[in-house]
Length: 313
Image 1 (tube, rainbow, N blue to C red):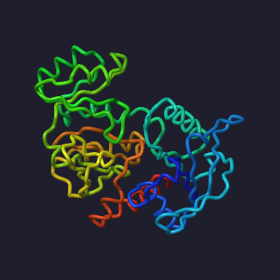
Image 2 (image 1 turned 135 degrees about the vertical axis):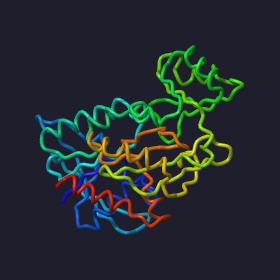
Image 3 (image 1 turned 120 degrees about the vertical axis):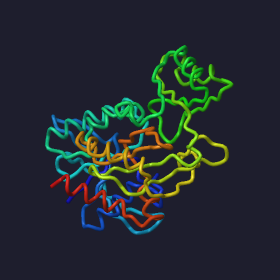
Image 4 (image 1 turned 60 degrees about the horizontal axis):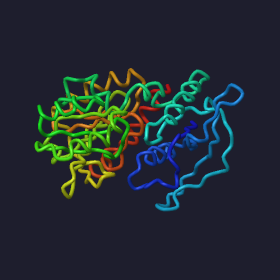
């Protein structure tokens, strides 16, 4: 089987924690051939979606971890699977890539997650489709609505709709200190829509990443616990990841969403849950494979490649 990874530059990988690397390693262990390319190497040429892809060999070395052959132009339908693993920002270039990948599907390519499904599931806004599981939430760019929401709930979180890794997240307490400045900054003076949510105090126990693979639930979550006075638990923001079994509420949320999101074309999803509330539905490049495997011994990458094989079959 030939698998092509659409991903960020390989030289930037931190292999001790990168989930895409874990996928590659498991695929290689099963004898599959691995290729990699970036979105800048995608093209529509003579009516066909192609990419300059490089065949990758894993070396087993921690630092100098791969060997790449010279890239060559290949149609995406030449691969058994194309895995979309490019990190946000989810900007127009990301959207253009989903259009090209969707066209490639019509030409016979098998793309995971499905590009239309990625495009249709904003990682912040998608929680509104499962409102029974969320904290009070407002989506707007109107300053007066934001101020009214703050007056009602007193302690709130404001965040952009297109960020990742905790970037651009602010907490405003009951005193409203800096609320106006934060609104102006995040909404670009009323030009950009943002999300505002009632603060969930259970964040001190971690922002839990729950993985859904092939419509099934990984039995462990990674609780990303804020450090040093931070309100953000994201690992990219300095949070510490602690793998733990799912609570009854975690399972209720995950088992409700898993089959529906898989039906929509999402092979791999990362749910973010704080306390008893769903806060994000991550569909672009969900991570935390290696931390769960290292701490709990559950091989997430093997479960993922199993699910990929089943989807292809």
